[in-house]
Length: 362
Image (cartoon, rainbow, N blue to C red):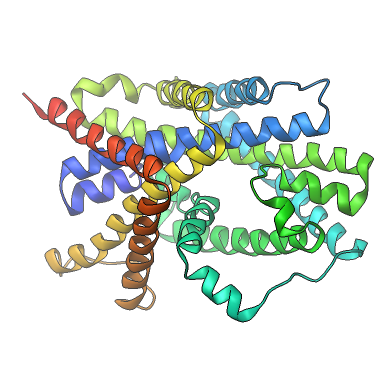
């Protein structure tokens, strides 16, 4: 089945929670991250060539529309585009990592054990984890396309494990390279950290080309979210008669209506919100949804003890409890540090319940 948390929470808890999760996936899980990625992409293009790309928002908006068009044409075109961009992204990231390691000239990363420990477990550390969780927010994207995956019981666990492992490795190594060349104080509050690191490593001119390369890697990220998000909308449209329009597909099977609506929402969010506000809003809201979904592991085992379980949770029952505890810790401190962003997350959840009550009326 397609839909991710929408289908899981619908079955484990109640259709109302499933619908709210579906709305969160649409707005928070995909449209808002698409907007944030497009902003960053526009910033990198502007850093590479300010004369050709003077307005980051315009550049980002155009790329949202172009990539959405690929995924609205057909499943084959959208899937092929995503495959090509993913390969290009991995090659470019690998080149940047290898170049940074072999170029030399960096400085040791200043990590002080006692100070680092206190920082991680501080209020700022908890909120910082919200941003880190955003960096990994696409780890479960394969689950949204389960209904279109052949031999899903075998392939999905492999895709999730390999994808998450590879992203973790690349994220940590690339972050270490950036910290090796650019002091942490100079990164603070900056979106285009990769551009500053590229200029330090390869020089001004080469840094321009690297910034173009980083922009291309962000196109891959943009494409992945544009491809996954509409599957949730399609699943919602198939379940609710009043939203049947959302399930519209082209003759080739592409979720046309979902792609168009998602692109529209992303453009609206991008025009009216800044990058930091979007990331905090996304991180906190998705963390709450993910924690509720993981809680469903305990509930489902209790309420359906005899159901066949082809997947086993590693380290159960400790690993789900650890995830839920860390999620609650992050959300609690985010409420203190970023109350406005958390408030918008609460508004989104409340809006989801209101919409469900309207849809569930006869």
